[in-house]
Length: 448
Image (cartoon, rainbow, N blue to C red; front, side):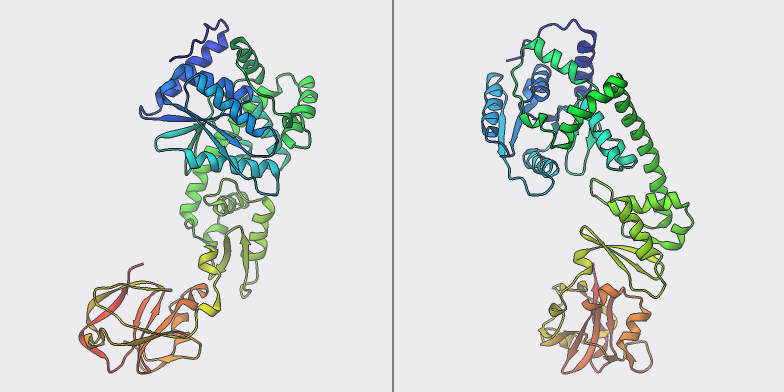
């Protein structure tokens, strides 16, 4: 069954249909589309447009946030309209976390979309020109930078899925006119009139005031978002080169960073802290990183915690460490444990994974399958490392090896009958000189 959309006389309707069809043809042939459908006039028009253009490639999804008593009936409405067109429809109920209601509802909605998106399937949303202008305005009022003011993209390729917004440069007035021409049924969400919500406030109170003074404001704001996306691409190129010069996604050389202008330093730190998140940190957080960590006294032990990461300075390097790398429970890294080493089995230890390899000089094969002991260092240990003269404090060897302070708790000592055989470290295994050392022996080699 194919939709029987009437012939459109209006030029913009024909142009839109042609443009959307061309965009469809630009996607790979196997691409299918999951249409986010709230039941509102925007998403219902999008549903009919996509049905007219590619009925065999679409599925609809309604996300019930359970925030209103009638939300379940809206899902039934969307499902019924889809059934009339023979469009598969998913109704997904979600629970919205406490906090900023608009933000948490959006997170729940996108999580539901991600749950149902299949391979080679793109999420299609009905955001239009007024949505774009509202997004830019609200982000401007929140103090957003270039990335925020770039607002929404028509084709938004994210890490886990891609979003397509084919109506992004279409005005709401045009959408309403087209839906009325087609007699498309839809629902009206009363929260769109509730000025308690920022977007509804902007739409109901701010928009009429600004539009009266600036009739082309909506188009101008959308154009600004487009220009900000150009600036965003240019800035991304600059940031890519600056990151190559200063380090990588895990650490930055502070001497190299200081060679950049202050503006480029701040932009690089902001993008670096963002990592794989969707949004950058606030300007205040970037300035805290500069003030509390980078510019702190050389002998100060400094750190900054932001989301799941810790930012730590060590020997003119700035590190971005996930909490799993940095935060540890000291009670888990104490005591002595019996261990047997097999030549064909890897060793998975807190300091890394090790495999057993033959060595010109190493530990005796007689130690295989014997009960050895491994223990975390407690402090004050002395060891005679192979290749060094005499016994040295283990602490001094660790310092000379420049093992990061946040990794030192993973270091373990291997022994046999209270004789130190070697030390497992994040930098590898250090062989200790002992009666168990032989020619043509074996050594643990760090493989990760």
